[in-house]
Length: 100
Image (tube, rainbow, N blue to C red; front, side):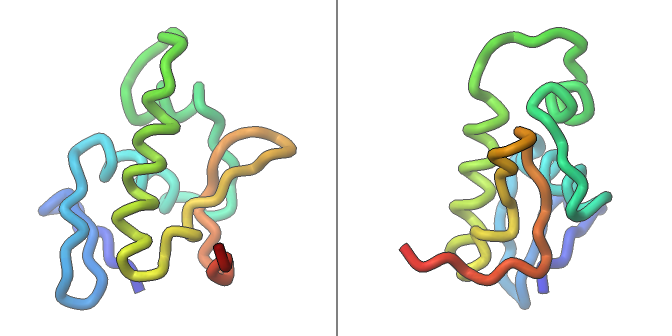
């Protein structure tokens, strides 16, 4: 299982730390607070970046990709799912790995 450590603001799997940057940790923490709940790009900009406007950048997508990449080292990149129908991201704790 993935352990989110609020004191260190990082996540670990077993004894291995993911070495998340502050925004990566903030995004992962926000998704973990309410697994399966969809969070739109604008929601995450507001909650993680504390922005009240849309800067029209891909910073959320880039941060999600970075966290997925770090999780993928442990075959867990699938945990952060994209909701193509409603838009946004969510933590899918029961998802099976996707074969590529």
